[in-house]
Amino acid sequence: MKAITENLITEYKAFLIEEEKSQATLEKYIRDITAFAKYLNGCEVTKTAVVSYKQYLCESYKSASVNSIISSLNSFFTYFEWYDCRVKTLKVQRQMFAKEESELTKAEYEKLLDTAKLKKNERLYLLMQTICSTGIRVSEHKHITAEAVRRGSAEISLKGKRRIIFLPKQLCKMLTRYIREQNIKSGPVFVSKNGKPLDRSNIWADMKKLCDLAGVSRKKVFPHNLRHLFARTYYSLQKDIVRLADILGHSSVNTTRIYTIESGEVHRRQIERLGLLKS
Image 1 (cartoon, rainbow, N blue to C red):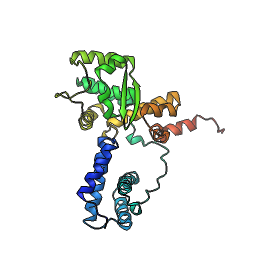
Image 2 (tube, rainbow, N blue to C red):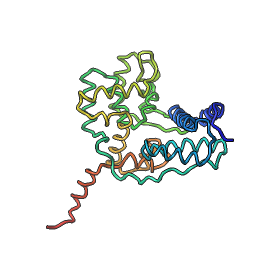
Image 3 (cartoon, rainbow, N blue to C red):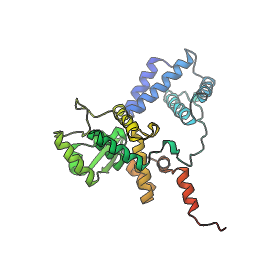
Image 4 (cartoon, rainbow, N blue to C red):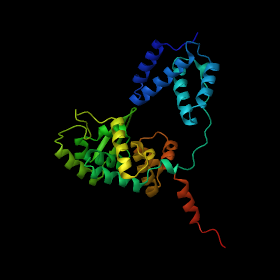
């Protein structure tokens, strides 16, 4: 009888750690598997049960979220060679346009910066600019160290892959002054009062506080949207999606395409400018 036990979850967690999965990925996989085990309530793991769970998820989650959970379960099943329990993910049509209600514009980004500066939150002011001008993930800000600022570049290692991120000269100048004022001799630039790198939840909460004052929708304000803004801006100027994929640390340009899709309004304006109509 196939059953998800605490021992199996612990063994699988050790495997994920050995595979050098990020902490966020590890926690998500374990959370998804634990939720499925709770749904089973002691019953055997069968393909029928997994299909039933997939249908249950479809009632409450979007297709992308359902597929993400199914991928976690399939990975678990593959590790323990429960191949007959794996199920297919949902077919999702590729998104052609970005949703304008969730897309952070450059003007809105600048409003957030102005508000952070007005509130004298220099740490957040500089952190947002660091993420947006380099395209790093919010979890990668710990690699922006005093040493990296002096070099003008940061080396980021994630999931066994290494990439070099160049820091704009103007950013280095601003960070150098901040480092001097904060008396940071070495290590990460953006740290909490106890000297540890800021975590995602702290950054998210700080950004949300700016929304009302800046007049920017809370739906648009989260750290990863700064990375998206970098990607869209870079691609609009360079039109080099392969190079952009390298900068962002993507293994596939298909992932990068998600970052560069334009809003329907932008596409409409481009169509209007084609000049292919005559009245």
